[in-house]
Image (cartoon, rainbow, N blue to C red; front, top):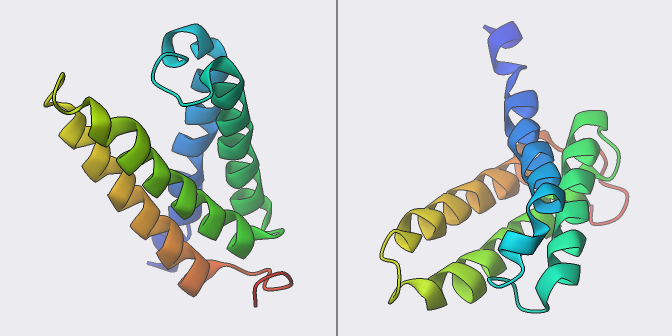
Length: 119
């Protein structure tokens, strides 16, 4: 069973690596949604990739997962919530980001190995 549950960090990190890559590939399309435009899309893409790498290698993973949770909650309420009047399907994105933020905080609490920065 530990072999199966040990895959969790890889399943958790993989989507963030993909999200990061997608931010670079689709920056023009995402720029209208992001406060700060295209540059913010690139910054958050780097943040996604950095969080994924940090979780995978276990270096500064507690800090990275807490910051990832914060970023996801900001996305939920600053990016997706304001668009709900135009697109009710944004509720799915809000709930997804809240759930992923919860997962990031659980990772920080139960699985993170590097407590050097935020113990």
